Image (cartoon, rainbow, N blue to C red):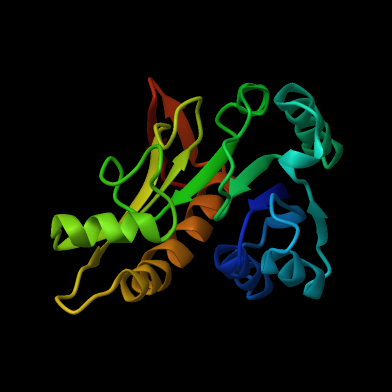
Length: 209
């Protein structure tokens, strides 16, 4: 059984996609041990509680400095003895001590086809605003491992989504979620749970069964 911690900051739509896949039997070897939110008012915490999943608010400003915050976040995650950390709409930068200890065991879903519209400052609606401003015809989503950079870790899966002429950032965001994010995040976790994902020379290799 692959035990995961899901880190969130907002509504938790990607978390809900994972919960739905688990309940539908599409992720038979996966369980969510804890949901940790950087925002105490995030609806994602309510989603977790509604499904009997432990929900924890962990807010950076509650700690006197970044080193203590990083140490306590790592201790919190360690407490649940998880195999994988999933960033699902998590808007905080994961501290280096967590990244190092959980090397190639942290994944993130990003709402673009990396390397387009990623890195510092690209999150939420900003990604889709940038895509529309640039006039791209295809966008999408990417699941990647997390390293010390921002959206720079090895790519696991990507899925394209068309941009429509009448799109707004909001309509594009919704389409990317429905057609890409909610599909490839559970799929990446399924592949990892089956032991089919390996990182070699900073590239992801996905093996057959």
